[in-house]
Image (cartoon, rainbow, N blue to C red; front, side, top):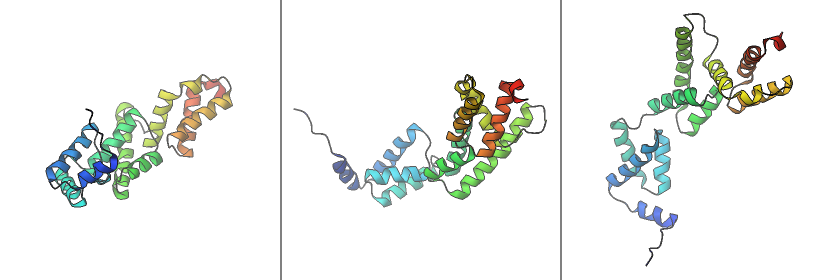
Length: 195
């Protein structure tokens, strides 16, 4: 005999009847196993699952006390991860963090520190010369170095520029940053064509 599967509505109703805070805490901890999350992401997930608001708030408070939920640490880790693995412009990072529920003030603080940290890294790796630009400039150059191969293979100079610019725009770089990164990338790829 096969057991009937619970419908989503039945699951929410069952979770809404939960009285034990440990059950909600366990659900939140399981959600955090995959990757770090913002407080709002956890709150949203637990409420959508059907848990009572008071139990959700208690679980979030407990996880914050344990250091498992910290929006500042989450935002810093998110930005560092993006800069390292999937470079994004400040506009895209701001939008991603806002969707995750991070406050505007905290986003501004973390992105401000991103710029100064990027400049320090550039000075350390370039023998204390002046930094080539903002954190977005560095991220845009890194993105073109990693993902600009398809555009670089384009024989037509205008199409090459268009493809590289589109790549930067899709990743949230503003037009000024994209223009500077594109000019440097094109000069490096084909110094004669740029003269």
